[in-house]
Length: 218
Ligand SMILES: CSCCC(=O)C(=O)COP(=O)(O)O
Ligand SMILES: [Zn+2]
Image (cartoon, rainbow, N blue to C red):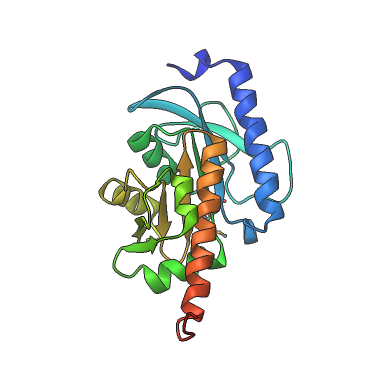
């Protein structure tokens, strides 16, 4: 499906949804220092042709302006004439869409996701077990364990994107970038937000659990 054939209503809905999520996450201080990026896919999905709205690079994501988003294709190229630059990390979003066909990808930097990727992710995965919020990933078995992949934080973004196919865990809708942040996704913005919130709860739980390590359970 070409970008021109996607309805204006669908494009506007994606922009409205992105703005709402951006405002909410900014209120949580999830975009410190212009970090983070968000995207929502529009139109039909084919592995070799899809389109999404993405945050423009380097913006203060705690303010709302008419220049916050642009539409790009499966290669991260702008679909319309614009002076805006897509997020520097757009290629990671492209790769996640290509592999999963998902509807939204959200990336945030938090102290918890940075510390956990660094302290518990040296093996290439962060494991979490028996935490109720794992059910937010639609994993319902008792005492379930998940492995969240961790990719080295290469300065060269295409090198990060190239690692995604080798590490993506279809059961776990997120990938950590070491000492950088997390990308979480879902079939739509609602699900991507739920997944991201669950990851952040798990990271805070693991962090606080490390601090309690020497305190016996009673
Ligand atoms: C100051 S944060 C460094 C870049 C980054 O990791 C990020 O998430 C924001 O980059 P963008 O180009 O999307 O603004
Ligand atoms: Zn980032």
